[in-house]
Image (tube, rainbow, N blue to C red; front, top):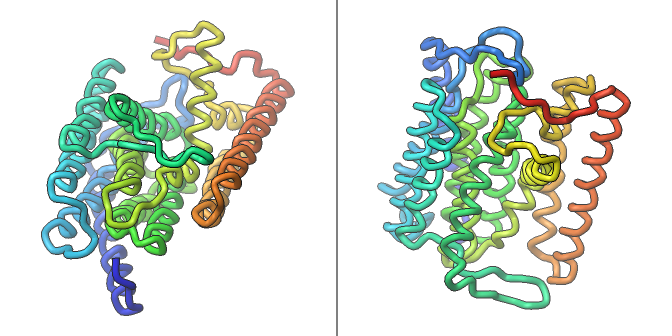
Length: 359
């Protein structure tokens, strides 16, 4: 990617502002539709609140991608991959919007996620190799397809599961995608830079309606779309542009939500609980239930994501041994966070972290 002039950067930011305003306009229209989220035993809200506000994020991001596909000359990947990203993102958004309205069973949701993830994979957008410290490039061979599929579906669900408090998912996504755009710009990853900027704009247009007090919720249409896009952008960054941006940047930016979901799944599996059963056992939910200020939980997650963004800038320039050491330090911090939440839960008398929702 050729160097971007200040005038060009200003133009990009002006376009991003237009997308944020488009997102906000769509959110206002969705509020008027009054697709209500009625509280249940695992809800963090007490009164019926409109949901589906993530449609603003979807429309803004896809509008940016379509304009980029039609008019972009530099910030592109090969047309089959580009179209597959747009089609897959539109597919996950469509199914999750229907889920917001009809509340599909988990099996149907998972099938839709797998189908949407398979779209870009079918066109060749898959993680073919990983660059590992002390080892170098490791071809994934026959594992490329299943690992890519698992990655996309896991991140899609992780951002969906983390969407349980006002501003939590959309705020982390805005910060993560903003840092990803900046890193890709510096590293020369033009497509990832543009697509991340579009996603960030969509999230920023939605956030004023969702934090500090939600007038509308993101809904599956937003949270699943956000997870899907970030997962796909990690793959695109790793090998589908002239300049590669490390795949491991996105897991670093999303370290807290990915750890929360993985930790909760493992803990519930060890406890013999049904993994598909609704619960309130995620770390952020437990922290909220201990009496920690609700807005404080969100701001804590935003702050950690921003810190990971700063770390990610440093990560790019580190030697392989130091990259590995950095990941070990981040994991240690996350484990310490889990112990801290557990200690608060014990002091608050929360004996069972995960309580099944009433049927």
